[in-house]
Image (cartoon, rainbow, N blue to C red):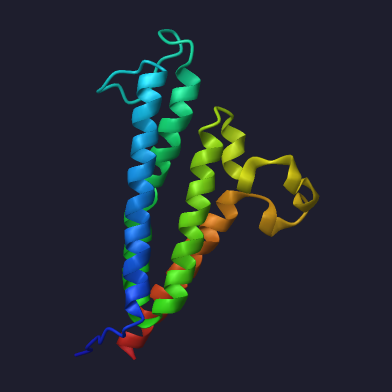
Length: 161
């Protein structure tokens, strides 16, 4: 039987969970503000363009949050498990993921869906367009998830052997 002992560094993992919670609450508030601004009442999940001329603007805010929610169980599972063996590395990958999700959301919330893909969605970064790492916010986000997956995989292998 394998036993797991938490190191004090696991506190970094816990702080990343708290940061993810704070980001999610902030996104929820942004969606709430967008509901008021674009007149989309509850329980409507997405506005219809036939009924609301600003539907796309609201839907971009809503979709940015919804996409983050869809990935949250995967992120938290990988973070919490991978962090058991590699707490600092997992916390760093978790922090990268959270930062990229912020930029994903703020870019998407502009009403131009392609802005979700670029960190800062600014032409100031156009000199970096040819470099794959700076190509999109989504790639940075998945680098964070991939790093967490590797941490979790190595933790699982370590438990078996």
